[in-house]
Amino acid sequence: MSATLAPAVPIGKAALGALGLLAVATGALESVVTPTLPLLQRELDMSPAEGALLSIVLLITGALITPVAGKFGDRYGGKRVLVRLMAVVSVGGLTSALAPSLPVLLLGQLLQGAMVGALPLSFIIVRKHLPAGESKVGIGVVSGLFVGGGMAGTVTAGPVAEGLSRHWMFALPTIVVIGATVLVHRLMPDDPPGRSDESGIDWPGLLLLSGTLTTLMLVFLLAPDLASQPLVLGALVALFAAFVVGWVAVERRAASPMIDLALLARPAVWKSSVLTFVICVGTSVAIHLVPQLLDVSGEAYGFGASATEIGFILLPGAVAASLAGPLGGIGARRLGSRAVVTSGVVMMAVSLVSLAAVHSEVWHLVVGKALIALANGLCVTAMVTRTATSVDQGDTGIATGLVLVTRVVGFAVGTQFGGAILTAGTPPGSNTPAESAFATGFLIAGAVTALALLVTRTMSKGVRE
Image (cartoon, rainbow, N blue to C red; front, side, top):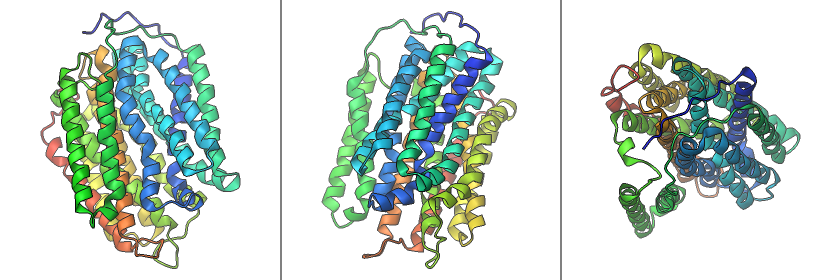
């Protein structure tokens, strides 16, 4: 039950600036692995599948933390939970910065994954402190700043890793995260709690969802070797199904479920979640494959780009993604969510199929990646805005958390799938995947993205449903 919300204290520009700086810093910390993944794979002797695992460990934690963070934010106040969550992120960033080996780096990324929960908490703060009309734009701006931080991380990670070391590319954004968290703590007024119930955390549901995601990632990680071991594959699929069934059963009976299945059953929420998942699967395949293709030697079929060059080649895509956040919020308000999402899905599907057919020049990858990033930003922002404004204010964190969970799960599945495709397409005794592996990955991602049109046609035209 939602309690009557007390009025929040208006916030000034300094407090909003601190929240924006935190969004930029966390976005930068999240993005440093993507342009430097080939470099990390060489330094830590990782296979493409292990590299994909490194890319998604952060997202797996985010998928587990996000609904808990959203629920706590609705119950105890967004600022209070946000500050504590950022303490965990800071520890993770410092662990990644000091990591001497892959296992320690994976641990750091696991802790950094708590940053994904910062988005629904920021939405709670924005919605409580700003008038209704301004909060819609505010949510889009926060999303855009997070993506803008990702742009900064994409550009600077390569030069920092090559000029200093891979350790500093984690340390520098972590220092900014720590500073921004202190500013938010000092400048942002406390937002009133929105819930009076004191039910505990749904630990069984959290553990079962952890098992579900871990099993799914194992299937993709081991997929190249599972073709010759059908019994192992069958056992993993059966285990995955058992986790899913068990999780649904626990969530339906829990007094305070980690993910409210009744809320998820609302058309505005489940459609947003399904669309976000499918769109992010397509996006993440491109995010993983493009840097790997750029890293392939020019003597083969690639471009032999360094980490710094990869960062600059990916920059137009990061710019497009940063612009997509505010544009998606404005477009959803003026044109309706369906128009924005349909346009984004078509743009992304066409771009992915085009990359499968043509990827022999750098500009092919630049344009394709930019269009995919723009489409993803438009779609996800429209989905988050649509969901946030279709539920009671006290449910904002939980509802947007559901969409963001599907976002990170979609990215995790797509990235691990991309890594499995490259591992399976690498000839024995070689470190270079066959060119056909890239084409296959892009083509499948385009086909999966196009399936989202089956859902968009059932959406209402407006933001509310």
